[in-house]
Image (cartoon, rainbow, N blue to C red; front, side, top):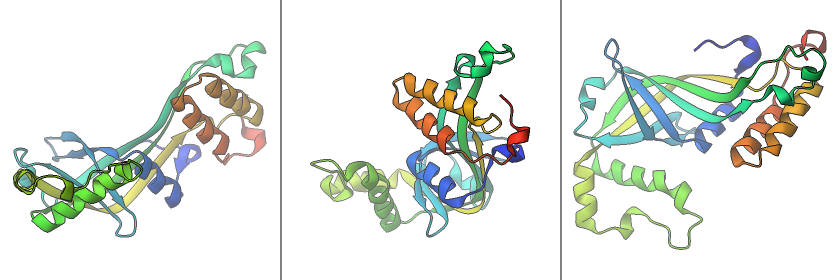
Length: 214
């Protein structure tokens, strides 16, 4: 991934939180014969791992010990030229697209262990079930059903070697332009727009004001 210095996001807290909030990752494996799968991940910062599972009908055995790339897509949104105040001054503005992503690099470890898989399924569901009045966990499903499920899946654990983050969040613009973009995003009235507005508002500017554009 091409990451200009201005758009690089290196803060570990920000990168791990983006993954935690957007746990559906795209895992790319296979060397010369690339294969991509979209899987929900358990994000374990303390152990520096990503954990998921997949159907045994997919040939994951060939990937054991291999390098993998997992891509996590955070908030993204179209940016209208109409939100940039310089449009009325000189008109030299174009649409753009803001986004935040994390690329995770590591090696694949396959886990064929019933106890691990049972704990993993509970951990994967817990963040999404904890607030519900009747939360689901493995023990609430019939034992024979769970046993059959476990036989059909394989655990996948990736030890994180490297994180690369990129935040396209109007960092190149001056404060007035960013304020206009934030207001425009909020005016969309959507959760998606509000999420990106927060990123633009929070984004650090690594250039001096003399180098910022309108």
